[in-house]
Each structure stands twice: as C-alpha cells, then as structure tokens.
Length: 109
Image 1 (tube, rainbow, N blue to C red):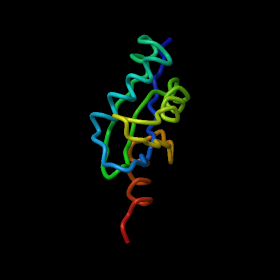
Image 2: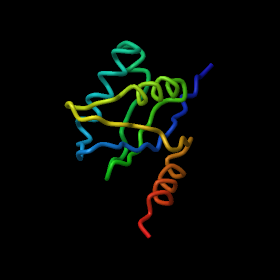
Image 3: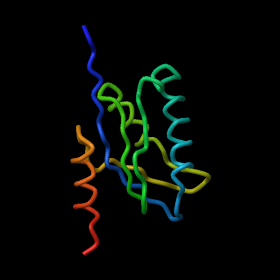
Image 4: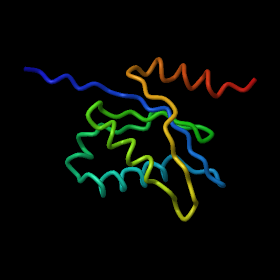
C-alpha cells in the first residue's frame, strides 16, 4: 500500500519591533522543532518556508506534522533577543488557495 503524503500550507504572520530576516526565522524554527520532537520527526515534517515578506509568510509541512508545526510556531517567543509573536492565520491543502488568501488578506487598499 502506498502512503500518500499530503502537504499543508500555513499562512502565518510575525509581529516584532524590528524587521527579521527569513534566515533567522528558519534557523530558530528548525532548532525549536528539533528540540521538541527530535531529528527523526523533523526530517519527516517536510518543513519548507515558501515565501516571506513584510512579516507575512507561507510555510509548508506534511499533514501528519501539522499539529507539531503549530505547536512549534506558538512556542517561538524571541529571535536574537528580539521578542516575536508568530501565529497562523490560515491553513490550506493547496498552495494556490494559500497564496490567494495572502493576497486577499494583506492587500493594501
């Protein structure tokens, strides 16, 4: 039997006093995820940061690791001594829908 690995796309927002680079966010996210769930679960999670701009981003993970990804996201409180809040806004099964949500929610009128 073939196990179909389905991806989930999380539209998220970061709130901080300073502008953060995606590389710093990725580094802290991977460290926290690995600390909480171990190396094996981290490699199975399929984590990939699709986009990031102006504090808004798109994160891909597998369906099985969705809960762990959300837990990790909620436990990140600072990056390089800069307080940060990272919270999910929308979860989608397709990248097309996730990108349309980003465009709709963060459109500058």
